[in-house]
Structures are given as C-alpha cells and as structure tokens.
Image 1 (tube, rainbow, N blue to C red):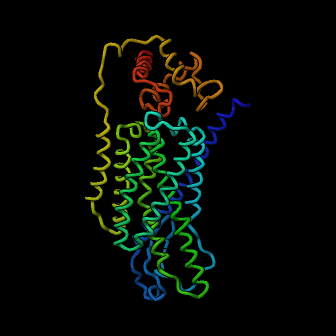
Image 2: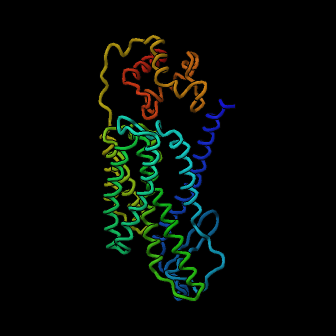
Image 3: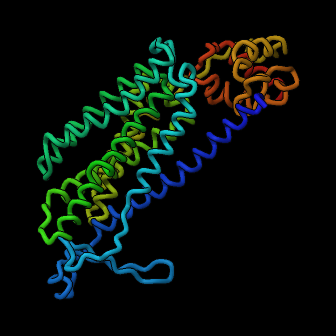
Length: 395
C-alpha cells in the first residue's frame, strides 16, 4: 500500500485546492458585493426611513425578485434576534489555504521553498522563515493601522506605509525563497492580514456594538470606523492576492530576473484597478486611474519578454535517445519513479519517457515549471536536448 501514498497525497492536494477555491469565491463575492452596495446606496426618499435611522437604501432586481437593502448609519430602532454574520467565508478560506500550503509546500520544503542559488538554507529553517513571514506581515500591518488610527488623513498615511511595507516584504521574500514560493508567500501574507482583520477587528467590533445595544447603551462609533477601514483594505488586497495565488502556474513571472519587481508592479496594478472600480461604484469614473493600473500591468510584460532565440545548426540535429534518457534520469526520475510518482507520473523507463513526451516538452521546455524551482539543476543545454527530441518526433 505504500506505493499509493503519493497518489492519495495528490488527491488531498486536489480536494483542498478545490475547497479553497470554493470558499474563496464565497469570501471575495461577499466582499465585492458589500463594497459595491455600500457605495451604491442613496438617501431614502421616505421620511419615515430617515427618521428610523436609515442612511441609505437601494432597489435591485435579481433572479426574478426585487430587493430593497437598507443601511442604518448607527443602529436600527429594534435589534432583530436573527442576524446574518459574514465571517465563515473568511475563516474557511484562510484555513483551507494554510492546509493547502502545508500539503503542497511545508511537507517538502527543500524542493518547494528553497532555491540554493537564491539562499542556501535547510528545509526546517525555510519552514520557520515562511511562518515568521506570515505572522510578521499581520503584526507590522496592525501596528501601522493602530498607530495612525482612522479617518481620511490617517487612511492616506496608512496607505503610504503599507505600500512601502509590502514592497519591502516582497523584496525580502524573493531574496529568501524560491521564486514560486516567494510569490505565493507574499499573497498568503496579504490573505493572512485579510482574515486577521475579520477575526480581530471586524467581527469583535460588531459583537461589541450589539452587546452594548442589547444592554441599552449607545455604541462607540469607533468600532464601525475601524471595521470599515479594515474592510476597505481587504478589498484592495484581493486582486494582488489572487495574482500571487495564480502566479505559481507561470514560471515566466516568478523565475524572471528581478522577479520582486514583477511581483510588486502586478500587485500594484491589481490594487489600482480595484481602486478604479470602487470609485466607479460611487459614479466617479476616473479612467486615468484605470490607465495607470494598465500601464503598471504592461511594464512587467515588456520587462521580462524573452530575447530573440540564438539559433545554431545543432538545434535541428536529432539527439540520441540515450541523451534524452540521461537528462530524464539525472533531472526528473528522483520525483517520478516507482516509489515516488509525483502527479502519478513515472519516468523511470524508456516506454514511460516516450509516453510522456508531450508533457515533458510542455513542462520542461515551454513553461520551464519542471523541475520545480530547478531543484535538480537542469541546464539550458539539457532543455535544448529535450526540445530537439520533441521537434524530431513532431515535425
């Protein structure tokens, strides 16, 4: 049964990834909806609603029905017994994400976290640094927010400090960890901040308000102000986090020279584009902001574009299969053999190599995602051998 362990491990990875995606959609969907709703409310025309404390309302049609959400600036006259809380989406997303990170990265840190050409360290040290990176992100962020407080002036100062911190954190990650892990960890750090905002500030603040109301008191408005501030930060973090999560499928970005700059520019583009849509909800169509976001997105596209290939006569000379087999044996079989068949793929026989020709070409030559973080040290010349092998068999 031991041979089935990698197989079932891959299933665990797949199901966790699926679950993480499901709850993540729920969280992002709720976040985007409430940001849109909050910025789309209008002053109620019915004086009774205004007298009752309704600061804004909206009429909408969806799914064959009409909806009339209303927002109370302070508290409703009568607090209902049944209130819907929006927090399980955030908690579930972070928990499933951390479990997936554990399965995919922490269980094999020397391959997934470490690139000795970037920073030579042990697997245990890599795990410790990764966990410290996640926790430190929240601590620094929270200190910044606490120090400056809430309000328009404070929010601008917080935004500037966060820009500097996220930039510094991205540089540190890309100089400590393998590129793929650095991008993922930076996204995970922001996602940790988002979930911690809900856990430590948004939900406790709401509970304090409700507890005060039930006791007949008047709640301190600072709880709502803090919750609003953290929720706004969360919505601007969303697109950068999504990019960081998706980036691990595209080695061209995380393996690029100065990959930290690529990461910062694209995350900044995501935050700027999100800012445009938030402003658009308020009927403020500042397309210059959108153009700036697109420019930030275009810069890394041209920055890391590959140079023209240097052709030589040997590019078209078919390699002997023994050359191909030697490359696979030295660089790939360690993870794709009878005992350890990652992704349920074996490359420990000539027949297996031939049967996986297309996949080998795609993963090793085209995307260069394999070997992961180039843990086995494959060279450009060896990739060229595999390229010539594929081209010979696919004229």
